[in-house]
Length: 105
Image (cartoon, rainbow, N blue to C red; front, top):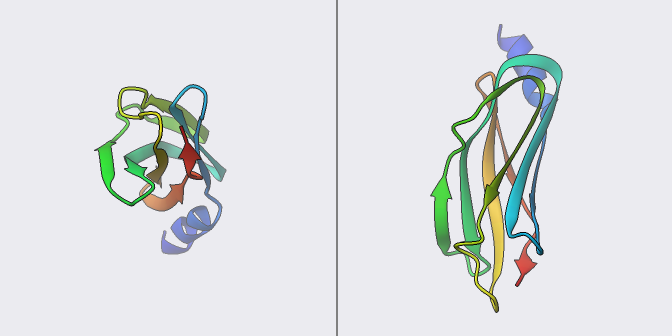
């Protein structure tokens, strides 16, 4: 079981994209092996100075080899500031961290 889990971990491809136009973050993950549980266990929106604006998790999960969800941050993002998003992705218990690029508004 350990070797199988390690192989899944090495094959997780995850991405967080923060949109300049919609102020939404898209969370996507693909795996090379079908999984029972794909999820984002936590995410945080940061100002570019490193201060946390808001944090949460996405309750909706998927199974298989693809995961795609989004979160609306329009209520937290203000003009004149720059932000980025971090996330922890989960694939059957194996985790991978990802961050978006910093976006100016």
